[in-house]
Length: 273
Length: 322
Image (cartoon, rainbow over all chains, first blue to last red; front, side, top):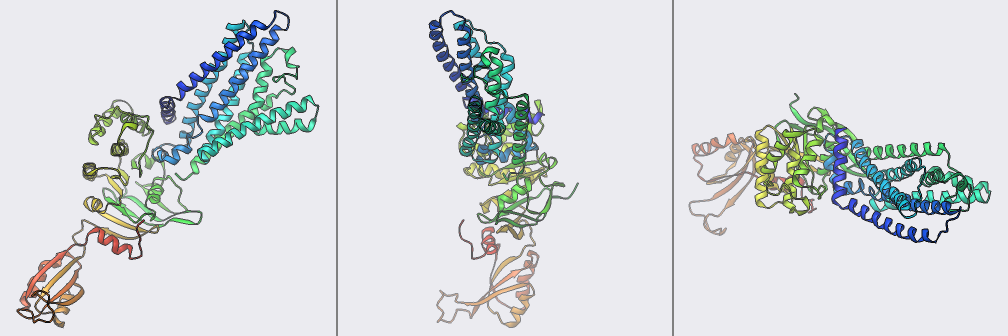
């Protein structure tokens, strides 16, 4: 465990000193400022009628959707060159010649990036909820259920990015990892459209794509948990749950993330350095 | 404790159809400073990576410090300076050594004391708390040497350790290798600078196309010597007698008076006889043998072959600069 923590510490120092952490925080603050300003003016234009809560819920969900996307983008970009870059530069030779398992190198890096992604998601998603409350008075319920699902989606993409980094060149890995997110995104929409149009074939295709890359499915499940029952049935909104991803999909996402991590370890273990 | 620090038997590595190491059979004694020589692309760095377990061999076997190649047990007692050493430039020199020390399981005051000693040894104490990105190429190389020694290794692999170093830096590396030798540490040195290898190594192996083709003990006085004799006579019986001392390399008449071949040499004819002695011990007997037989000895010149000459001779004429 000591060597995993040493690699985790090294990874954090590198991320911090490359100004990744301040850059991410600055972007979060900017996003929250823009979001807060927009929400402030929107709030002023919403009349105090029974639909007001639903409208505020909708705009809070929109903010959380962006927070989820930013967390996933960070999860992909943070480790995109973590192994490939060190292999190309020769840094990995120095590390791997020490009495450390290559699995420990992967796990140390994964741990740091996972913690950073988790903190980033907590800050940005928490920021959306706090900004919404401060500007409109709306209190977002069930955040405790949704945040872990969003984190799982980001964790899956993070692990895919690390696994790709063990095998591919940096740019190729970035393209492949975002491709995975693209699959999830398209899969989610195909599934939703299939549900709205009652087209079983589309729903099956969408579900199959979600099984390959479940991050969007996890967001849809999180969005489902965040909404009151009456809104959940409104399939005409971008956050409507035409078809709610099941618990099995959550477990499947966990299994996929674990498999991706094992793949990363296996590839690095066998890779000529 | 096994007597050999490194022992390999027909170690091979190929990448698809490219053979990087064809047959690496080595036996390196503990405490030896061993040079690994060969032209570019001969498979030297790949061989080091095989010995460190950084790449899997395609065939053959080997042990390092008595343990199979690439085991953590062996790596815990090994230091390694890769060719073109690089590390995270955001770290300071001290942090670099601390991270590497921790990977060896070192902690606390003992590690910090070791770091101070190493920083002083590679002349980086003043720059210890500066980030590597502010270091010169030579300073980074010296930091790399320090990280290779942080665990007080029993075996050190130095792949082109003087790359990027100025003459003072090279002297520093040479003195570090001498200290390692004195401490009984085995050093595996891969360098293109043959003068440096000649000055530091006990023994060298020549590798060509991924195969060890020859080995040479540099400090061994029993090594053959090239002797050039200028004699007044070099008749058949004389040559036959000299042949008992070593291998005759040739006999040429010489003109001692200015090289004019048409003119009769002053004092009669003279000959240059080249002889390769099997051992230096034969040398003191050579002059008395000639004198007692009344053969005029005008010059006896002993020449040891430089490592560079041996390298060119062993590698063959077909080599082109890599």
